[in-house]
Image (cartoon, one colour):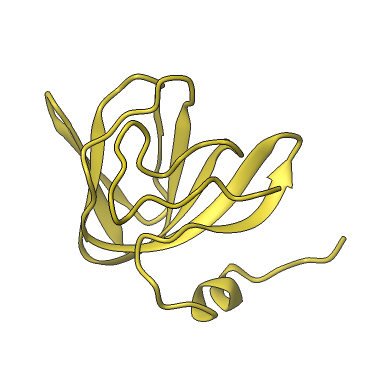
Length: 118
């Protein structure tokens, strides 16, 4: 058990939209990612997702509205809700979700990453 620095973790990679596992709490994965631009519309049949903004801001587009998240804000997207993150500039986010969660949910495309092994 050691303390870690989120700034050091984020400084260690440049790739956008690629989640990095930084820890687990029971069977729940704690991931970080840098995002910029538009992601794909998707949903998760059985998993809720929590998004926490570490640096920057992004919009979580839902089919009926858009929620803007700023540094320090968080949002839980319930299972089954179609959503699309959009960041106009680079944004650093943390995600808390089941370890089995596929980043693109019900969609398979070039941004799909296999669930991170815990």
